[in-house]
Length: 466
Ligand code: HEM
Ligand code: HEM
Image (cartoon, rainbow, N blue to C red):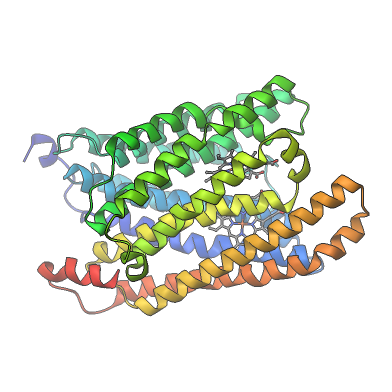
């Protein structure tokens, strides 16, 4: 054992932080989707909960979006990083205590953030509705501990090379920190620069954090469960460097209707097509890794979720490239088409990959088989069918809104025409919400189940359970 490993704190069991983070993430997933579900009802029935000031649409919307991004997706990323980094480095997490403290503080911060929103305290800046003290909190209690633990564990690794997922984890934490600081309104941006930086920030939260870290997780889960090595380490590198090079530039494709310079819009529109390079590299690399193991798609929940997410990345990126052309963007900007695309991204692609990681890692961390494979199937189908219905209803209503906008149709006529789709979005949306409570229940029962599997049989039992 090296001197460094000997000096590490030994009083917390390895995996404590990952377990806590996975459970916290699932709880925030349930809460975050309830906010979304209530907001969805308000869009179909505007008088629903009317008169409750802390449940207006203006409160529910940021509470939903920021809770699912910070509480679910990013917390699940932290859990995966705390689990996968030591596993890939063949060592312990650098500082388990620091990670556990950070997750508890993170949970507290999310409660405070949502309380400030309920009290109407927010910036009004999309994807950054929390106020500046919460910026500091995120920086020092969430990002710094995560960065230190990830980087120091990699530095202390007992393996020779650096697996592709680690490249992504380590680099994305650095990139998101830079994006977070430069894109913050605390930097004093104003006028059109402020609008541009708001979208430079939001675009890069998607492009340099959510998209690549989700991919890195799939690069771990798929080879682990299939037993196949990743199809190509080299394609993994093409993926990594093309994300860094091409995803960071077209932030302005979110501002095609804004009074920013025309050359910037054209640049964003053209350079945005290059995002298809990392997308193609990622999808082909994962699908080719599945060779000979496609039966696991129906047999193994971890693979089923992860692969569904990877497959959703195909329509997501095709849709993205298509909608950023200036002619198409003029038509669908500001409509539910975009909300459908956003959910294809963060729910269809990213969330499915993270849930796959939970089904893979949590039973292993707990040393117990999954409580119920049947419940996992219900969870999958409720989320998958719910999402497809939700996406279709939003896309259809987006097309109605776009047609109304283009033809100067009456606003009330448009609302009446899209009402059935808004009702469908409520029904399918709540199917997703309820599905996540089954997920939480299944994981709590897994954790509290009395039977522990003897060491030697752990891997066999968890593999059978998914
Ligand atoms: C992990 C799951 C989910 C994620 C990551 C997610 C993420 C998002 C994001 C990023 C937006 C902003 C989109 C935009 O403005 O273009 C959004 C808006 C919204 N989401 Fe979700 N969402 C999830 C699940 C749900 C569910 C299950 C429902 C409904 C039951 C829902 C209802 C809404 C509503 C009503 C909005 C506001 C749309 C608007 O302003 O027109 N979301 N969500
Ligand atoms: C080739 C790939 C992609 C391109 C070219 C693209 C393009 C776009 C464009 C142009 C918009 C803004 C449309 C508008 O408001 O008029 C948009 C919105 C959005 N995209 Fe993509 N996209 C791509 C892939 C992705 C991926 C991989 C993710 C995340 C995993 C993502 C997440 C989102 C979200 C959340 C929004 C909604 C932003 C908002 O709140 O307005 N996109 N995308």
